[in-house]
Amino acid sequence: MHIVINSTAQQKEYIEPIFSNLAITVSFISDGLNWPIADAYIDFSYEEKGYAFSKITDSPVLVNSVIETAGHLPGNCIRFNGWPGFLQKGCIEIAAANELALKNAINIIQQMGLNYIEAPDEPGMFSARVLAMIINEAYFGLGENISSKKEIDTAMKLGTNYPFGPFEWSEMIGLHKVVQLLTVLSKSNERYAIAPAMMIELNKNKN
Image (cartoon, rainbow, N blue to C red; front, side, top):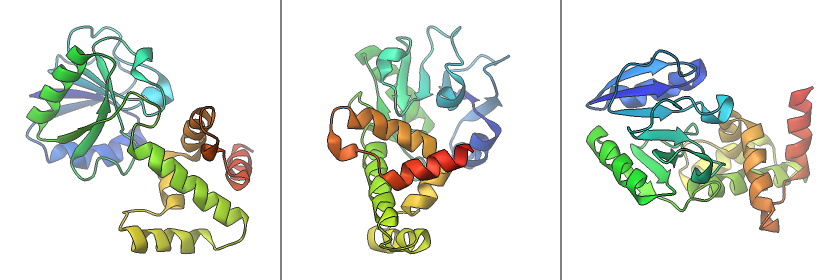
């Protein structure tokens, strides 16, 4: 099986080791240009650059769309959580708006040798929603001078066996993406209200 992956150079660094261990061949492209024929297509850079595979209408396309729901995508697409740190265990979190797209994508995922978890077609799915809240709570703690970033990261890794601490993870994902997800989630649930310290850091990074 051959897979075409559209990604940024930074994304390719953490994607390539994962896909090199699978029983498939992979072509990496950027900007969705000049792609070869493939059994399926994966768009990792959707959140950065928009949808890349508009000319692919029949083959399955997996789109790294953690925040936007599948209703924003063509009918042959499903969403998956491709944020850094979520694919390392060989399991992919997916969500879809229609059953046919989901069935086709699951077939491809199984042929790739990956496990999958089907999540509701909601912002954040399962894992990113939980992680965004953990990162948010960490920023509340930081703002209240409860502990330092390093100490909070260390405590989380030791206490939960997570591979990264909340500040390490937010840096890998991009703090702006975490804020975007929390902003969407907070519209329907105030428990996702963004920590002031997080907004201060985000605005500082913009300057």
